[in-house]
Length: 299
Image: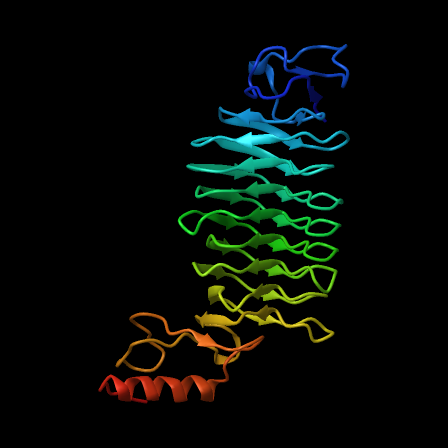
């Protein structure tokens, strides 16, 4: 296990000299930035607005013990696990940036792993997990629809109300991986409320909460299986849904006059509440749409 380095200044760049000390009160050894090791930890130590201005590799950055926080700059890749403690760990706004590592919310209220606040695009390669208190989310996205969060990894809800793995109020979310509900009935893996089209490629699994929830405005494209928990909690609780090759013959339907099983053109979403359309409902709507367009379906 590497060294835990404690920040000693606020509102500075992460590679500033005399910033990191191996004792929390600054009485120990100082880190030379070029000597940061892959198994070291950078702890905010109550210091705020530490800007990750250069590509950074270590085992973990966190806000454990005393809070504080980091700001992820445009064009930067952070290769480390992100762990929230008494405050949100990382703030990200505009441009594009990447995190290669797991993102975990804290055990207290509003302790986000990442707070995504504007129109930037954030890419995460790693698992994202909700926390243990009210609205403690792995990623809390309040950014603009022109931005978004792209995750390659699994997303899991937490253990308290609103403690989803990912929450997005406006911006799209794109996930390639398994999405699982949390251990609290109101902690889905993902909550999508924005009208921008989000995408999940992977299975969505219900636990105590659904894997995915969306509002009436949330639009979601789903390619995978929805798997209910043993207690009957659905994997997918979306209201505006386009399905692609899902379980039980739930498939997307679209503008098409091709052979059954092939789908082309713009996806047509099915509106409802906490549902999947049945195969017969899909068939009815496809035939109705095709007739209105003067198209011919075979099979």
